[in-house]
Length: 126
Figure: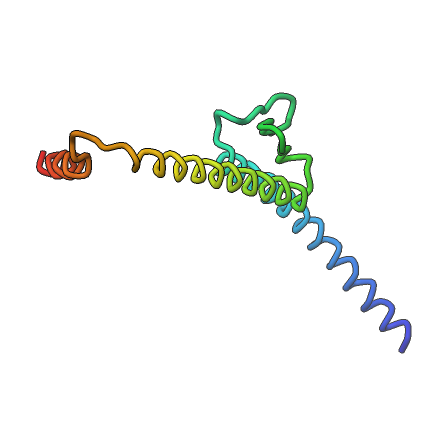
């Protein structure tokens, strides 16, 4: 009885190994393809360096090597970049708010809202 189980196990293991080797090759190919797609979608072709089998976005301060970095590291770098952009946009918004507050104190000879509205209306009519 044990010999039958052992031979069944051996057959299962060999069969499983063959499937894993095919799956592994397919997964590796899919992984590389998805990393390349991510690089072009996220960083864009202008930001990528791809010599000697690498695919790297060297935008500082958080560079990403799409082929060599782990998925966790790529995610971390993307999160850091997003936080940096958020901080920049908050700074920009603060500056715009300060400018608007100063600008509101200046009396202008022309009603810019009216001028902008009329120009916008003309754009849609053309």
